[in-house]
Length: 170
Image 1 (cartoon, one colour):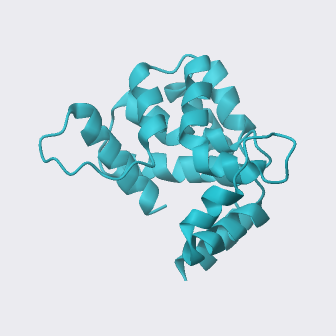
Image 2 (cartoon, rainbow, N blue to C red):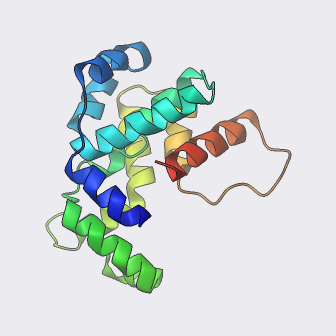
């Protein structure tokens, strides 16, 4: 049921002027431009993750910038809604199939699957290119990693755990 509601939220995603106005508090103009190049559904998702973190009283600038930009790596690869639906179905059947389907060739019909698989690294590179802090870049790069099993993590591990929790419920 969660995936069905996620699909419909993606179809009707909206971003308000208030949301866009908020960007200047957390992103530089080049970073905000990067955010605005994302599909509207990814913008909405980033904003939802951002707002979820703020509701939990997280105020770390690097964390909130990472929340807004964590899926920016999906923006340049032709990843459409139908790809996302197919990816969810493939992951349910067998995630190894997605690895075999993905191809690192931008002109290939298989490239969007590669983008999905590698969007954390692709996004980190884009974030670094527009001047995001090293912490923000690393949070974007690591946002799909399994949660750390050590109870004695670093401050960055704590920020990552908060980002992953907010991402997981949005």
